[in-house]
Image 1 (cartoon, rainbow, N blue to C red):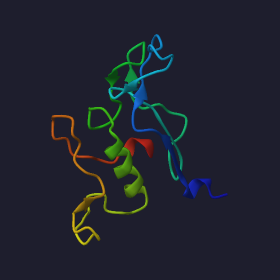
Image 2 (image 1 turned 120 degrees about the horizontal axis):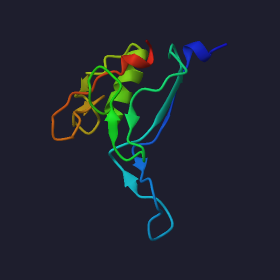
Image 3 (image 1 turned 90 degrees about the vertical axis):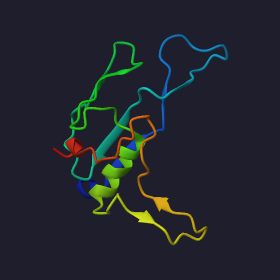
Length: 122
């Protein structure tokens, strides 16, 4: 009965290379494409946002309003937003004295600002 109030996110921080295995019989990190499962907590289920090329190597359709790839920071902003937490917050009174940003800037060379992926709830 708590599924509608519990946001479930299953993901890693990067994808894995498609195609043949590497020299050690495994897959390498792939930063250009990955997947995540988001369910419960008001998520409109049964949908896929975005698309990759036929091999799964690059994003060809971002599938959301920002018209760019979805980054880990965007997923974090989505979770904070669903919880009613201001994801733009920067905490400055940390024990180390260093500032902590809930969702730091995206380091993709475009200075993109993280944003909630509200399409998962639509």
